[in-house]
Every structure is written in structure tokens, then in C-alpha cells.
Figure 1 (cartoon, rainbow, N blue to C red):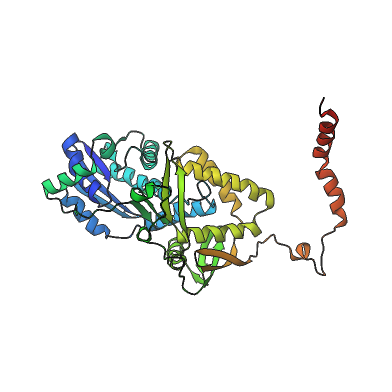
Figure 2: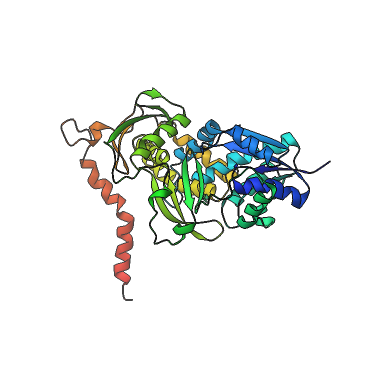
Length: 401
Ligand code: ARG
């Protein structure tokens, strides 16, 4: 029986050529797998037709938008995950959901190997292959760009030579990856890290310098997940979509960073994640009133570690699963409303209310009704500082000796 390979297929030039390229190099039949994670653009049906026209023996297409929002974006929100304090893991969380579908398709069509279009320099090859090794330990991986010398020039020549139904002249100077959680743009002119991004780079966000009138929004959360916007019920996917539109119109969520890739390179990336950044900001502010202090402090560390694991391709790892359990436990009381103003590139919280709040007005107030017993503070401070005071006394006694 002829060997079968499932290929992560985007519909673009490189993966369209990869279908025939892999076929010629290996003699295997290629099954194209296209997964909709809210990247927009062409319909899945058009992508399916192109895959078949480019020589795929079968095409597997999946609308994974709700799955992606529920099972990948929401855990990222609960973790307030920002890699290196900036990046809400846009591409990093889409790889594991694509991996799930690749492995499912491999089983359905009896494939032995999974192929993807990544280069050998990025994080995504790691995320795909570590994920595939974990979910399908018997499956092999192959990356035509990295392993079969499929360069851009060769791809264009191949497409023209075979008359593939794909545009080869349109030259995009950037490498772009996008889904409903955000958009990542790199390479070209951006590789000089002193160059400011030009306007044409952005798509999810409008220029924040000339914003429309301020937009006030109330986001209702239940156990860490957005469930309503301005009183209208929403699914996680709808919440992200609506905030992409409204926060995007105000230029919220533009991020320009030089980040540490897993493969040891520092690389410059421009992100746009208006919905994600508005949601993370609101969610964090709701945690501020509903999560107990020590739990909250520890959770910040856990969230950072979670972000690093996910960035590094460890979505399906035991540690990530354990951290998920911790994070989930912290979300028990993260319910209530956050009011925020979206304007001129900023999402500023200006009101919060929750039935499970730990904010105690009577303890906090400086007005009448204050129930906080200030006389206890002196003794507390005395003991709180004791350990440092004892050490300092010793340091002074031994100084210069
Ligand atoms: N640097 C980001 C990451 O590793 C995004 C990579 C996506 N690719 C792109 N063409 N911008 O998660």
C-alpha cells in the first residue's frame, strides 16, 4: 500500500507546492488538512478545492473556531498568559489545536507521517512536532521547507511549471500568522529592530492616534470566562470577536517586541491582539478583587511559567496539565462585571462589581463605618520587621571585622 502523509495546509503558495513536492520526494500520497482557527480569508471549501487541484488525494477541513476559543484561548485568558510580559501566545496556542486535527486526520486516512510548512528556525516546528510525538508517538514528522529543500524560489518555479492554481506573483514582504486570538507579523523591513512598523503592517487594529469617540464596555465573567458583553450573552468565540472589533477600532493591543525564541534566536515580532489584550486586562482586574492575596501572588508566577511552557511547545506536557489544574482552581470565584473604556490604544478599567468579591468596603473606608482596628497595626509591624531587624543588628555589630 502506498504510504500516506497528512499535511498541515493553509491554502497558500508554500503548502500548495508542498503537496506535489512531498509526493515527488517520497512517493507518498498527500492528504491536506486545513483548520479554521478564525484566521479569516478564504472559505474552507475553496481551500479544499485548491488542495485537491494541487494533487492532494483527500482534503480534511475543520471549523475549529469554537474549539480554539473554548479550549485554547480561554485557558490563556485564565492564566493571563503573556510571554516575556508582552505576547499573548497567538501562534503558540493555535499549533496544539492544529496538531489535534492532524493526528485525527492521520488516523482517519491511515497516514504514517505528518508534514508541516515550518522552517527550521522557528518555534512552530517544535510545537507541531512535540505535539505530534505526544499525541501520536508512532507518527513520523517531515517539514519540506526544512527537510526537502523547498525554498521560495523553487516553490514559485514548481507552481508555474505544474500550472498550480495559486498566485505566484503577489509578493508579501512579511511572514504573517493570524487567528481569532491575534495576529503576528515578522521578517523583511522589521528585521532592523530600529525600524518602526509602517501602517500597512496592521490589519486587526486602527491607528490609535486618531481614535473614534471612547467606547465603554461592560464584560461579565463567570469563573474566569467572559459570558456577556453589555448584558448580551456571548460564547467565548463571540466575546473575542466582538472585542477584536471594538478594541481594534480604538487601536488597542498593538505589541512590538524582540522575543526569545526557543531555538536561541532573538527575533522581532509585531502583534495585534485587541480582543485578547482587552479580555486579559479585564480578567486581571476582576481577579484583583476576587482572588485572595497569596493565591494571586503565586498565580502570577504560575501564569508566567504556563506561558513559557506553551510558548516552548509543551502544551500537552504533564507540567502544563498540572498548572492548568491550579489555575482552574483559582477561577472558582472570578465572576462579576468589569467596566472599561476603550480609547486611543488603551483599555482602561474604571469599574468592577462581583457577588464573590473580597473587597470589604467597611475595612477599606477612611470614613465613618470603618471596622479596621488600627491599634493592631503597631504590633503587627513590630513582628513583621523582627527578622530583618535582628539580622541588621548582627550586620552592624560585625561590620569591618
Ligand atoms: N513569534 C511568534 C511565536 O513564536 C509567532 C510566530 C508566527 N509566525 C509568523 N509568521 N509571524 O509564537
